[in-house]
Length: 465
Image 1 (cartoon, rainbow, N blue to C red):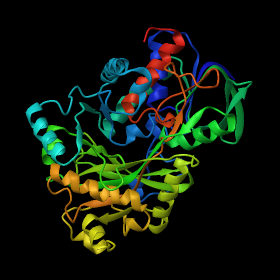
Image 2: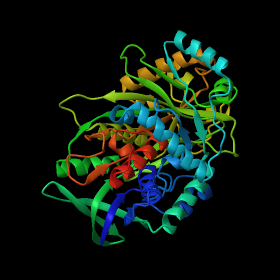
Image 3: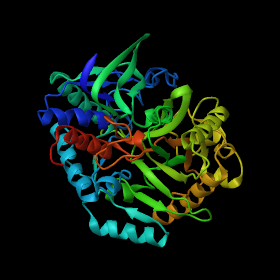
Image 4: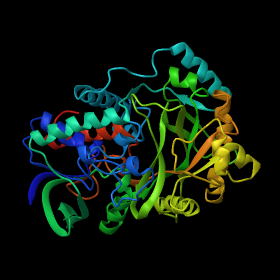
């Protein structure tokens, strides 16, 4: 099989590459290889069974639109949020392209309302509290798609791509890249039990967080220049909506960053879901990790958010993804394959949490099959200390956040640590090979991945950025 542009991964980066190629009337023959299913066929059986079925291809993390769209579905509209891409291409270009990509989302049905900009005086008051607590508040305009609405938007995009001649190969795994004399000529793919080769003039790897491990292995095997980057290890915190009422109303998502004693690691909040639901995602080898969903219409009594500790490793260690996976595997072992949950007060008291205690608490877990236990038995000391001290700082901004009944779920892991070495035109060390999105270590989230796709398409057609 031959094509002009081969895109591996149908997450936001790959989708927006194809979209922009069509909008620029490129005339290119485009093929997308996606390990998961079409968006209309993505369905988690947990809704029927009440517990995770450990599917081979998790419907939450794989399929058209990727993992991000099936979590909270939020678009961050500031170049200060979403990874290191602005350092590569410049903040002005990043912000300009964010606004363009946002207009595409609106075109396909995104909510016109922007969260977090209506009450600037109250934002100032929250920032004052953050400063007193030793934290930095990053107030970022948010367009909330919502988990269920995001699926509708991406379904419309999927239909648009198919109607305009894009070939999307669902349930198809990319097994390797075809590289000869340092030139990428295509990829080998596996459809059921058949292995085929697809040749292309341009190969774009956009495998997302789910494919970060695969991309790291591929880089090692083919000597594609890359370096270990940051890996985030943390927990998902759940509290009553009443505790988060002010920041939910004023900011929708309170992005707080700190460097707590004694280790001074960067610790940040991420993916805040007012009235949301804690969810389980499954990665390869049945690794269960925690995430959060936030629907437009369906609401719970709780707010959940991630607290992530950034780890930057130095030589000779060069396997940050494997390190994070080992933390997750150990936690899964203690939870018999399930997500573990523990009350903040029990951690301070040096005891595990029991299921009966959760039933008596004000904060009822929205992840109903989480196993009550002791997450400190698996979480590294450095990360756990950073998390506990950071929670105390956040409590100065959001009184009640450090309540004894606050729930901590583990493990929350972000696999985007393999940083591909590229120039500002997304050229890798291998000719005709380009890498986009969260698996590259340059972006974090739906919007920045979408921006990268837009700019990649413009590079292909030689259009002005």
